[in-house]
Length: 224
Image (cartoon, rainbow, N blue to C red; front, side):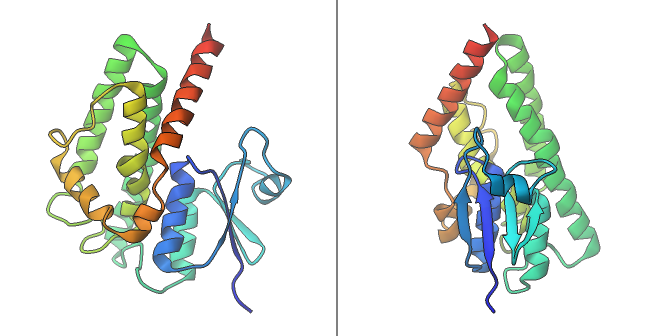
């Protein structure tokens, strides 16, 4: 019996996009279910009753929540190439460390940049710049974060930096993420966008800009 794989996601989420990228890289057929996060489906609540969030992967009826957990599950379940996590225990630990750094530091600071103004936003931009410099340093001397080929950490970073954050800074009217400031990351992104499945997972730019601007306006109105 063939594996039944379903992914509950949301088109603008870098978290669900990273799971899509892993599935496509591994060549795993799956059914994608788009969730309306303002009106979550009974299936999403059933499969992720604890956090009630996307993404959720359902494999033969068993549900796996949280994007980083899902990536590891995919790699351990489907052992075909590309292997996403390094085989060396130290390298594997470091990949997990930097993935958590992206989610718990960089993405949190990005939200601060999005939802603040003036001096507070300037401080958040400065903090985010330093965090991205630390991440870029991890890429020095390597074609990809994983080494010679795309891997776990590349997938974690890919949709956030290659597409999602560029759209966000355009919507906000800021210009902190530039090739001059981050030449190594920009060189890496040029390699990534040439990979067909990465391009297939691109967040639609114009639709995303409208979505971001609408959310920002709603937040401004709510704070008045």
